[in-house]
Length: 132
Image (cartoon, rainbow, N blue to C red; front, side, top):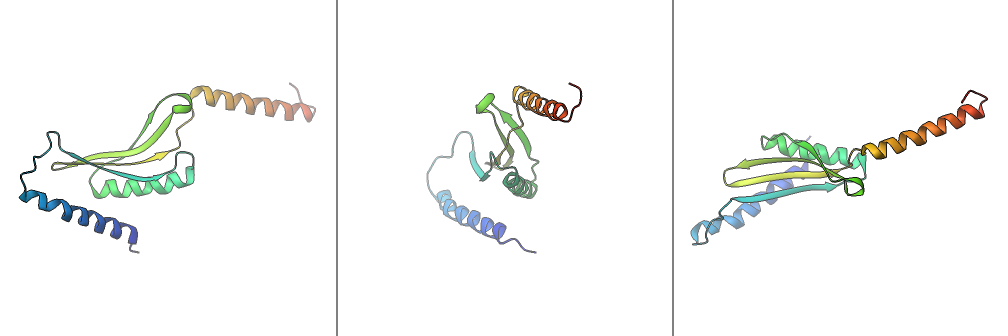
């Protein structure tokens, strides 16, 4: 089944290319280090379901461009964030596609969660007359 979104995306990229093409007939200097195009796909930093959909879109675009996405996690504590991203070059154009995804918990956060779960299980066991 055709996906109108990807047809619309391709049409928009062709439109942008058509707007840039006339620069070839000018004396505008080319950049020293190439040009970057960033494709930000949705925003699902705290929404696992949306992150799955957005990651599938990143996968599809990356595959079409011959790239393989990977997860990158940066920061610590509350500033910890994760991106599912790819980077690929096509001639002078570097294409970067990404979506933010929920970051895996830090060890400290995971330990706190496990300690809370352990305390809850102990309380249930004690309430049922079990051993501590």
